[in-house]
Length: 49
View 1 (cartoon, rainbow, N blue to C red):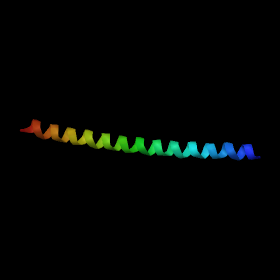
View 2 (view 1 turned 90 degrees about the vertical axis):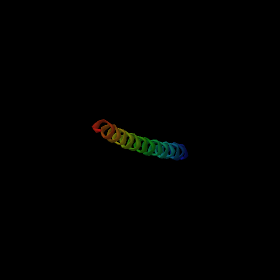
View 3 (view 1 turned 135 degrees about the vertical axis):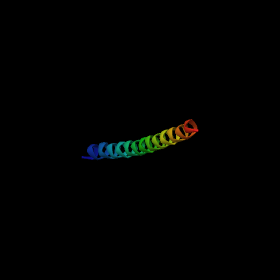
View 4 (view 1 turned 120 degrees about the vertical axis):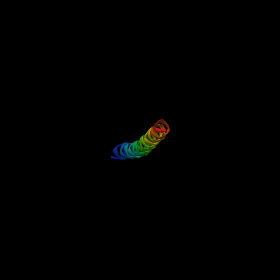
């Protein structure tokens, strides 16, 4: 029984870590998308002159 609890705690820690990595990945994707759209907008503005 104690062994199972130890394994469960390790699993919980892994899940928490995965969630943190997932959130970081989402933030990175959001920033990349925002930067790309901003870059395209600026590129469009500079080319329309």
